[in-house]
Amino acid sequence: KLFSIPLLPADYETYGALKTVRRLSQMKSLYADQEAADRLLENGDPVIYEVYELPHPNDETDLLVNITVLYPGYVGDEPYMTKGHFHREPDTAEAVIGLSGEGELLVQNREGELRSLKVAAGRISYAGGGWAHRVVNTGSENLVFFAVSGANIVHDYETAAELNFKKRQ
Ligand code: PA5
Ligand code: NI
Image (cartoon, rainbow, N blue to C red):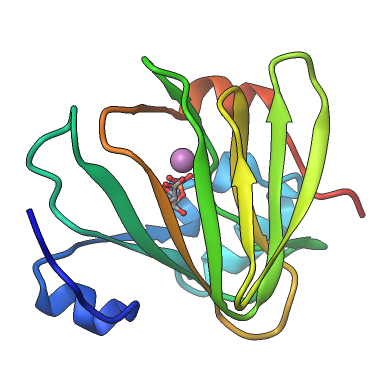
C-alpha cells in the first residue's frame, strides 16, 4: 500500500476512509454525571466525536492512521472525551499528533498511575504500550488529531472503562 494525502477528514473520506460517529447515547455510562447526560439526551443525541479510519488490508504489517474530530462540549462539568481503550495482543504504543484545537491525552496504566499529556496543533503525544488512552477536548473549538498505531492491535474498551480514568478537575 502506498499513498500520500492531506491530513484532512474530507480527503480521508475521498480516499475511502470508514467514518464512525460516536454519540452520547453510545458512551453515556462513561460520564460521571448521569443526570446531566439524561438532560442532554432529552434534547437529542449529540455527536461527541467522529473517527475517519483508512483501510488497512494487512493487519500484521500495516499501520492504523486515524483522524478524530472531537467536538467541544460538556456533560455536566466533564468535557467531551473519547471512549478510551487499551491495546492488546500485542499491547503496543500509539502516537497522537494534534492538528487543531486543544486538549489532553489522558493515560492510565494497569498499576493505576494516571497522567495527562497535552494535545495541540504541531505537537506529538506518545503513549507507550500498557497505557490506556483517551483524548479530552478542554477547549472551545473542535479538537482534531491524527493517531497512529500498529494495525494488528485489538482495542480493549472494557478494561479501560473499568479504570474510570477521568480528567482531574
Ligand atoms: O487509535 C486511537 O486510539 C484513536 O484513533 C481512537 O481510536 C479514536 O480517537 C477514537 O477513540 P476510541 O477508539 O477510544 O473510541
Ligand atoms: Ni489506541
